[in-house]
Image (cartoon, rainbow, N blue to C red; front, side, top):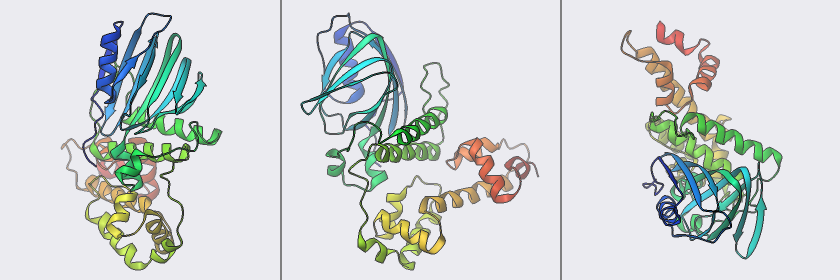
Length: 326
């Protein structure tokens, strides 16, 4: 993935409309113009960013604005107040608890907030991340569509909230007072890809590929060998399904079928197995007093500490702390 245009972690507060417009323009990479409102303008904005993804916690009163394309996919959770969003000649209202796609990479958007103050959380996914997860070309990401601006059902909404909660506790601390400890790159990459994949499926994105007849024919042993070689040569590097498929010279669906047919698992399950084995070896090789911890090893290999403990015990029959202590 190329360097993301998402800005760094920052906290900002103002009652000045010009400062507000300038800040939002910098934060979202597009011109933001404020409209007239009955209440005085007031904005409090905190961004927690990790790689190609950010979580913005925003409180505002007297806010109405329109903006051009951001180059990002933005999903908003309304916590308090209400929002009217206008795009493509249509207007829709959202209230507390609603989740919706606020902006696509190439789409203009206008919004007005009501409530004093209204509060939202905005998940910002860089277009480069979306391209990496789907294997889509940049122009496809720029013009992507979603079949619905809300999650496709209650189960889909739950999946989104679960993914967002996990990201918040691991790499996107959404409170200004949260620790600023940087998460390991593999953990950031894994969480970002999970978030992007969840959003694309929850909102029925046009970038989720349809099945092709040729994919089954491409699920050959040589496809599997190329994919396995790619995974095993660089488990320490950020990678996802689209990367593995490119290395095997097939579509993501074809490489999924190859793994299911020959190994009875998915490519990402196999990647997690390889990384788990590498984490196990790191625990075995640790010397007493060298500072190695189970949490650090887990995060180094892109895994959350709690889930790592469960997965490790299932694979090796003992908790990782015992391996580290032996």
